[in-house]
Length: 145
Image (cartoon, rainbow, N blue to C red; front, top):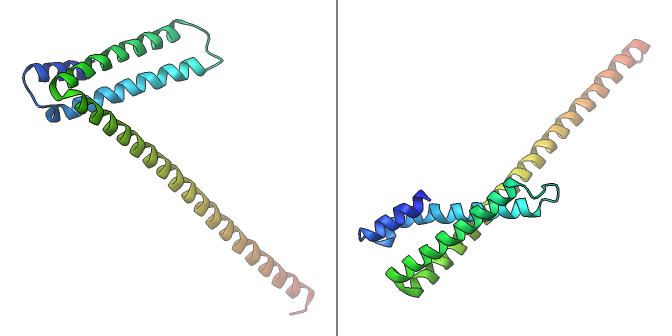
């Protein structure tokens, strides 16, 4: 809500939308977080209809209201095309974040695979060294060497 207040105040003071980009970004991130929280609460079969579920619904509705008001502000200052560009940019940023998240997960999986391959290799070498040392010791004890 503080981001939205900053945006409204900035627009009222005549600031350019580009100068408000950080606040707009925070606002959209907050709206997305609220929607995600509500969807998680709604899709959780173990969570009964409680005060928490009601709170997420109310927060979601407030976020929708804020988004509508922001839409009106952007359309009033930049036109419908400005809103459409903002929505396209928002979708692109969300896609980039999801790709970065997937890339990070892939890197973590690769690291884990490499780690376990190295551990197994070292254990294999130690096992072979143990077999070799044990065989030599056994052969010396028997007098074969």
